[in-house]
Image 1 (tube, rainbow, N blue to C red):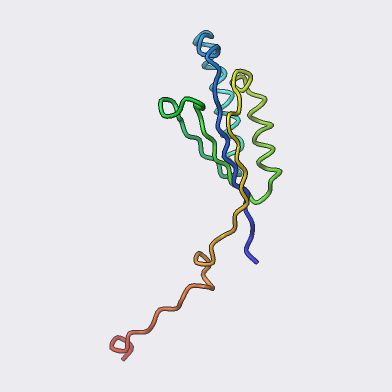
Image 2 (image 1 turned 45 degrees about the horizontal axis):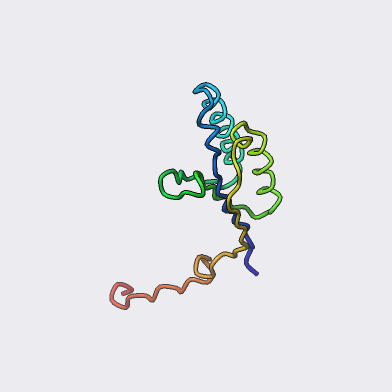
Length: 120
């Protein structure tokens, strides 16, 4: 049986009040958020995407992939400890359970037919 993987998409909406804070406070919040993402990303798959200007209901998208659901929970614990998340809401959150494709496994790939001309 193929291994199962947890895939989590989290969409974050930052409050307009956060943008009214001082430049230094916003910079500190962003540094904390980036450090939390970096810490999680050292051992796990994590990608972040800016959605500013593309959607009105969220500003940031996070995509996390892991074989254990507890690791994804750890990500959200880390993020919720940052200053930015005090000023943000999770507008959408999707969790999926996937499995690897049979086509990606070496044992299931068809073997190459030998060319009779080059075999001689």
